[in-house]
Image (cartoon, rainbow, N blue to C red; front, top):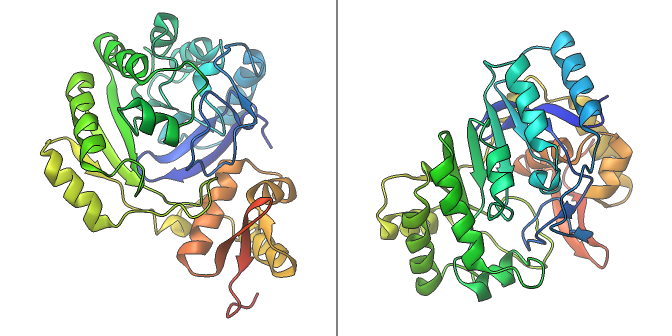
Length: 315
């Protein structure tokens, strides 16, 4: 079991992806209302070596000596990866040792106004930053950044990164009804896309429960309507990965433990992470499959979102 690597896990866009997690659980520069990993416990823009770079390198060497080559190596996890001062060092290490494996970085893009951060990501093949709003009010409602962080500098950082970066930028945009699906917010988002010039605009909506009660997804038809209204030729609507159970890395024993556990009492995502002893992203994979199969459902309680067995299922 690795401490800083997880998977490979099936990704809706990146095939079988080996995750690299450079940040402790929920250390992040945003506290997004839709985050499936839970509330941010350390809201910060301070960069430091949150996890030891040398230990990450050792795990990578061990993994590739003992496992099949994944489709991608993806920097992601349950916090913001660019907060780690050594992300550029790890990227360089991977490119030096396994140059044929493409690297993707999933980031909220909050630190791209820092030239050093932009420089550190130049060895990546694909960078997937988020942009859910282009007005300060909506930005603060959805992403909840630290005090004093402005949408203008956020967007300018993405514009500057596009100038520096020769790889692909897939801009992730999550639509939430009642938050950013009104005509003015959608118009401002389109204006930002034109400035940023991403290779792809990945249009998405809520897939798993967020951290704010009663958040709802928009329909597939509504996403298509928004894409049509924008009239841009690089928009992709991201579909749910309904066939994740058919992926080689899916382990039915983990599924069984989840079902047996929540049959006794509902559990939060954090509860299940502790019980299974695997990375939060992997737990989310199993929960997603079980929800797709209508075996489990979510309920909101005082301590957060809990997973519960649907009563007509037996284990």
